[in-house]
Image (cartoon, rainbow, N blue to C red; front, side, top):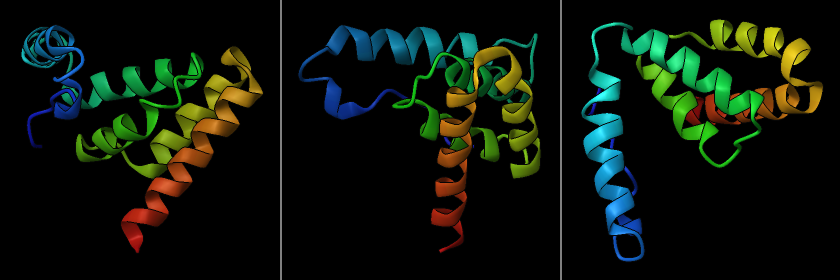
Length: 106
């Protein structure tokens, strides 16, 4: 999987945020040995969906697929979290997963 990084177009407005995102989040936290990248992706997607963080979710759904999660596993996780995080959050997440898979299949 290619190295993750913050969107470079944000450097002009928030250079320090981009720097710490890359250095701390992606170079340190995502590389820690306690969880596999696949498991980190499952946790990240679940939290983003549960908290209705719709701007970051599509990117991390793509990362999750690259890290070895299947569409079926992501769908199952989203279905499960509907009962804990709310129906609107789950429906939004599954719609974003659908759009991503359609885009990748095109």
